[in-house]
Image (cartoon, rainbow, N blue to C red; front, side, top):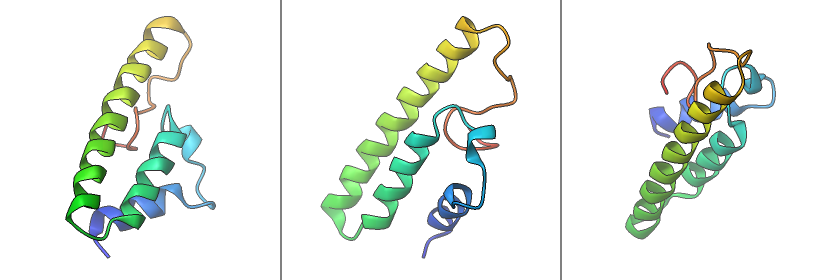
Length: 84
């Protein structure tokens, strides 16, 4: 099991309240699902596309939330807690 997969699974586990740390926890869950099902090269290529797409969309949505809502928590991250 890769380090990235262990980090994602730890963050999205049911015991952690990830909603406090990220704007779009559903995107993080989709990322976790893609990591779990990756097995061969075509799947890894698909995973790369999905990861890039989710990360870009989460960043744009996070910036929109920050611009639109004045009292939105500034300590939240777009998709990966404490990273981005």
